[in-house]
Image 1 (cartoon, rainbow, N blue to C red):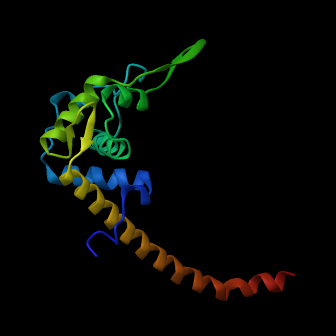
Image 2: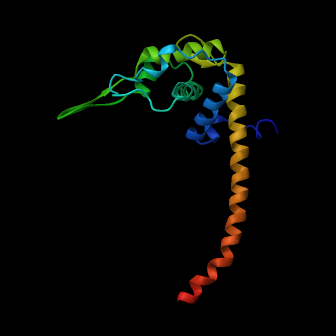
Image 3: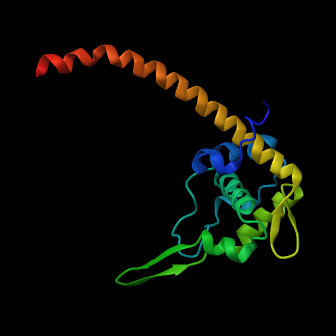
Length: 169
């Protein structure tokens, strides 16, 4: 089946999904990357900008997934989610939110490519966005199934080597 038998984003590993969806967004080439993308930090409590060149796509994929899991999520909730620990040297550490402008820009780009839309409070996934997410999740599920079949073959080969253990007893 096209969708791996109704596979949802919830059925696959989050990290693998975000990586794959980020690649999809990059390949699509419809998202407009801001010119400040290589110099901006993702939050005030960070020292450096992200090392990964594709971090913008990765964050966009992550934001899309978050909105799928919790519809009507706004910028404020996402800044809290992507926030982290502000380390202040010898003083106690505090929680700091992530940069809202960045998340807002990503949401606006996702709106332009019709993945999310404003609805009441916050944003929700559009039908097109939903199809995209499910398709990627389905592909991941199929790849995972194929990998597991390969792993089963490898395990069968290992069974022959178990004789070594018997000799050591």
